[in-house]
Length: 205
Figure 1: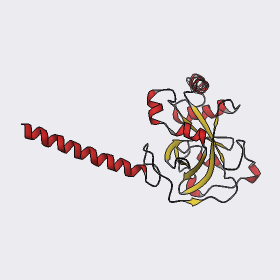
Figure 2: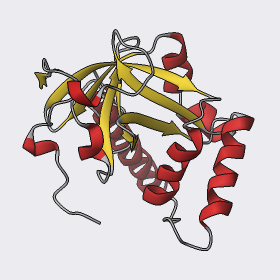
Figure 3: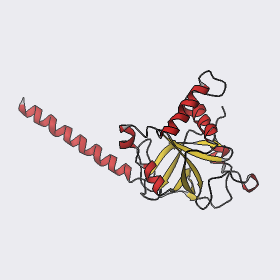
Figure 4: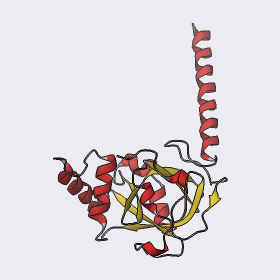
């Protein structure tokens, strides 16, 4: 019986070791794997044209981004409003959030980032916004896409108000994804060009 228990313990330790090695390998991989953070982007084509038409991301569920310091990448939700791109981070005041989500304070210290969408990489800067007049509209997009509260639904206003209260309390952080050398403002529509076809959603709502 003791031999069986010992063998079971050894088998469990071996499986744990394999899992830790696999997780470590993912952490240094070319981009994130699902919700598991990855390493620096090693593949992708740099975008060199004018500011693209981000409206193509309006109904896309997720994108990937990588901070430069530290060089780790993650999968994130994404909201688009009036040609501006935003990413959220919730649970910021919970023990779970403080343990799991280390990137938001890292981005506040150094917002330099890279956005990767279907193999195209955009050099960006993440800028946290807390009192921008666009926040209600951005949170409205968050509610529409991810919180089950589309425009016209009975729970719409309650959901948006609750999310805005979380922003004010610091439990929900919103970052704008701006050009690396630009300011956090709406791009000039005349300067926009269409995104590559691969970035466009395959389905419309």
